[in-house]
Image 1 (tube, rainbow, N blue to C red):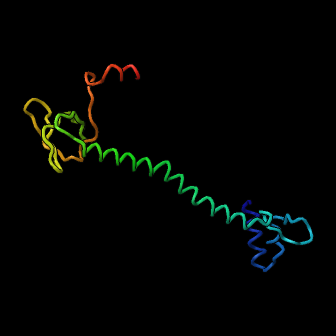
Image 2: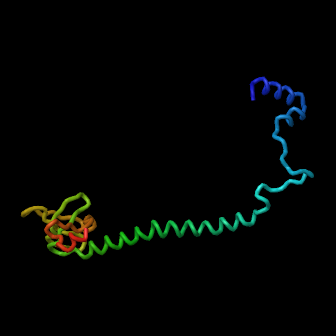
Length: 143
């Protein structure tokens, strides 16, 4: 609306005229007879049922594609850390590569180089490390 239309509307409203206010309202689009119908065609019950179905569907989607793989990865990590043995070549969270020298309940000693041994928490081991010499020729052909 232009400023002049706003000014004229304000002056009509100040005088108490309701016909000017009705002129700026959108026209009614009902099919006649003055009866009002709902825009959805009376399907209020189906909308509630759709919400009732969608909530469990979203939960299943999140569980199947997010929570389940995270739990599986966590179980794999725990089994790796519990299965550490002397002589395993491992990688830590910080990216250090070394050989397990000693294994304790919550800690391990990793030999990074000759006579360089560092104590780490068992949880800091992320994976076992395989060098090119450790990979068997049969495994190399599959890749």
